[in-house]
Image (cartoon, rainbow, N blue to C red; front, side, top):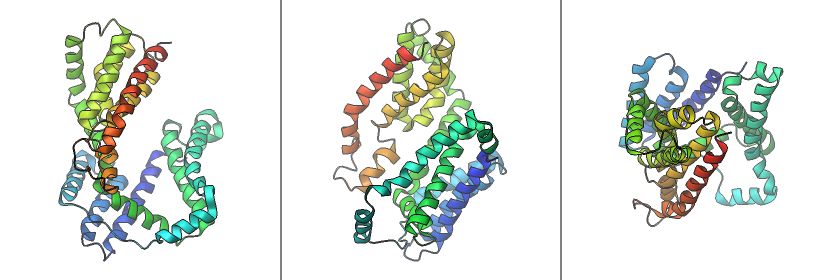
Length: 321
């Protein structure tokens, strides 16, 4: 059976390969720093469950220190823009095929693991979506290798080029999600829930008020934290579960799913979501990329607010069957 630890091994080997290729890249003046950063990340994937909380904490601190000193951008061998344009014109829309394989494999694998005996025997049912997503990536890479026949190291080199372009912000979602778990363990969720119950009248008796408080709270906490994954455990423990689900009878699956979407509305409106709103602005070299509310965020706010209202309405009418 394919389980989540197998997927962690695949991820760890990928980052280990990035570390080795970075160390060998003479064109990158900071190649050793890049190699150390990706090497530590590989270590966390491969040995994270064996080195304990203290060891993982040291790994996280090491990543932060290396990121603070700054990573370099490697120059792996790749095709020229002219070669890519010619390849794209030759193959047309078929180039989207590998990208479509990934969600298709994730959907089929998830359904198979949960609905069939052979699927449950092949894929760990409790982590079916994540495992199927990773399998979809591996299948897509295999299809591309057989179809386009690039150099053997091309997937790793192109992955390194992309990761170097994004830099340390590539692991920001995982770090912020971990921060949310730390906040939850420290009792922040309970304190936030106490504040909401004291200052939001009708929270314990009105479904509409509870839904508004949860969705708006998710968006605001995401604006502060920079990531809905960080806000989710805190706001769900504070408002979502005790009031919307337990006190007022909301369906937990629907409440949590729509609550995450409400959090992503906050992601659209904050520079704290650096990997979404700051890194792309820097990559595109937008004129106002250094501003707190750069052009990306200003363009997204008129979409985020109506989406937040839509999520509130959806939760109010769908979460209480």
